[in-house]
Image (tube, rainbow, N blue to C red; front, side, top):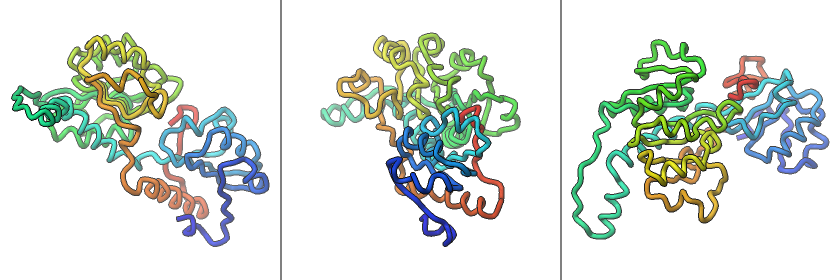
Length: 304
């Protein structure tokens, strides 16, 4: 795909600092293609005239650091590339718990005719913490089930008139929203403000039947608090695609909890996901060469 860049473009690729010693001081553009953060930071400090940085990931915890944040260099990311798949995964997680699909599979494997009542999601409330492109994709796919959508965002006024949203909350209303929801979806980036935002107090504010769904970043949740709430059945369950430590260590409590649905951080790994992310970079690179506005410019101070 890089062959689609203008023919005069010099491309240097590597996973070690030594690969960039000659090119970094004259580089105009840096692409952080999911590489090691320490290498990316070191190479950035070696640059003298870089005018644009792009992150192949939507999340920026492996891209942002003080020197880049304080610089005038614009940063773009892959926001929106993975949203549709994550919206579908959340829909599946809602139905997994509402219809108790784990029980169905166990009964089938055991050869047991086990009839039971299931939950109708129509009329229930799904709350989305972090209503950006992923949050909107989640709302678009879950609302047709008859779910009411509550959205919590940093700037609630920006959700005015959104036909997908029934209720809008600001950051200071988190507990109020949690108490309303049957499903709570975390779709926030990892920033100093969101790290650890769901802890004991927040889990206590949720309904005993509510399900926590995390497709954002693992450290948004205080993992020990969630394990306690799940073990003591103080919430209905959790569907998790992201974790504090990845891969999830052997023997971790999440493996054995029967009210947890685990995904190994692959809810957005559709066939060709890397190519989709690169399409955005190539498009932006051509915009850069034509002095056109770049897509997905990040607020570096906010972290997304």
